[in-house]
Image 1 (tube, each protein chain N blue to C red):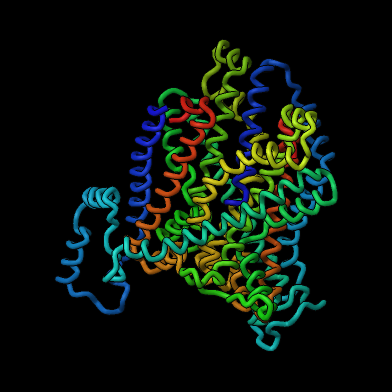
Image 2: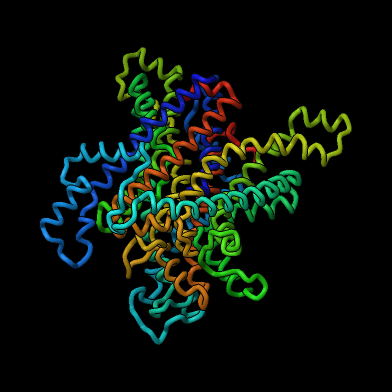
Length: 315
Length: 314
């Protein structure tokens, strides 16, 4: 087991190197110089000094070496556009916002998705089942931007008097919890439909198991059977789906952050691309990828614990 | 896309189950004509999928026929007609420049659907080639290619799409297709490799090898045609993600340039005036949802029709 964990852990290093290389190679293809975005011409000598400072005068492999060194020492370099900030500063400032938003969205998705799936499975083929699944299926296809806009339209504009929710903005202190509600629901909507479908499917499978029949046969109350046996066993697929989804939620909130004007990492990524702030674009991409790679690793190791058969199959 | 992750994973799981079953009875004679007829029969008995197929064709028809049948111009600016409500003359109303939204929704849909199909085909070509090469070659080549795929698997595709668009510097139909393909072909490649590997074990492939068939004959005559069913299902599983990805990029202002439009840019227009005219964002978004949902149900029906053993329990 230890061997498996170590092997899986060591394997993430070349993977991160590869992703860094991939990103690095792509970023080098983008045309334009970050120092010439402004109308002011930069004098030749200053340009040379800037190039030297940021290693832009070196060949690509030297630049790559410096960058990889930076990645593994958690130093992603300075921002090329906002001169007084490093990429680390920017990530430190914006990532906690995205992280909290992602966590809240996940909580919403689980709190609503799991009961919906359970309800619709226990009442299979009833009108409740059909209505729930119609809601879940149609909900899974509606784009994020419509969900967000409708939430704002109804809860922050039309029924403002009742709910007192702001239309946009984000306050990361505890007192700002009102600004969290709508974005979290908007972001958690799609994963909620996923959880509902997964839980419904696995509950339908679980209730056919022998131990459920045994539990019923020995006279256990149905409510207790559901709570004790059915729910616990059908949550495993949901949990395994949750880990990669969390990566998606933390990283994939571009639209929600855009609409609600949330100063998160996704919104800043788009700004950095249009502003040709290479080091920030790269830094964010590498960081997001690293999060997902590490999440994948954690899931694989967890799988290894839960199901010993997978240990040899995956490294 | 996050929304269809579970569907794809579920599909992958049922595929493995089916493949295991298939290996067991490998060698059983398959009569092709009856298999196809069987599949069509089973598909037509699945009411949800038939409705979905009908809805899908309807949407594609709407997108192509409306601009041609409706005389309203999608580009003419007429401020006296700005923000007209829904009416007989303008069933979807007009936008801030007085342009008819029915025609614009249809034209925007044309862009979205075309980009969607083109990118899906690109994903299929890249994924199938990669997966087939990896699975067919086997050995250390397969190992290396799969390790590479594992490395890229699960990467967030939007950042890479955005960087790709930045590399090109311009946004047009083809750059959009490339951007949407760059980080989206991994699942297809993986499934394809699995298919080739299990098919390779079949007796008829061994027989062909024993008879001296060259590798390309085995690959193109025996292996690839047998993956066709899986490929067709995957087309309908990938299409929604691509259409949604294009809409996201356009919504963020990184998509097709005005006055041309896609559903994403129309939705962005609508977002800018959602407080006064909420229907402008609702209509293109529902069009996207319509297309995505029908594609998913078609995929479900096809999966069940092509292999009854994979019939999902829910």
